Amino acid sequence: MRVACDDLTEQLATVASDDGALDRGARRHVDGCLRCQADLVQHRRVLRALRSLRTEVLEPSPGLVTEVLAHIEEGSERHAIRSLLTGRRAAYIGGLAAATAAAGAAGAIVLATRTKGRRLPLAG
Image (cartoon, rainbow, N blue to C red):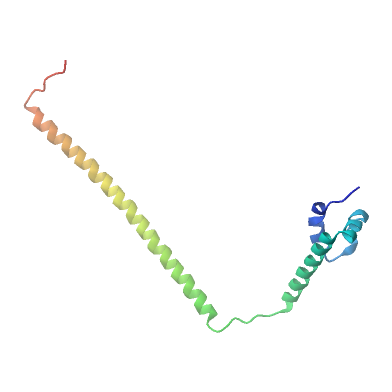
């Protein structure tokens, strides 16, 4: 059975630390395929780098925590201002709608009072 590189992609990631986990056909394919060999080497490099990070301790530079907190605060202030403006925009639109409705109702009342004394001719 012929093994394709795409069939081995996930297997190579999981077996990067243990060569014995590949079956005979997959092992034979990797031995003859430069692409799969390169993928396996790359996975092993990533594993080595991750293992070395376990023991490495990084000290933050002085003032980093203060700078991060300042950025967070600045972002939250912008969000609060944006929320206020959005809320006011909705209030302005609601006020305009109410004013338009009130103006329309007032116009209807004026029209009704003007025509109350007169009879309008019927069409037809």
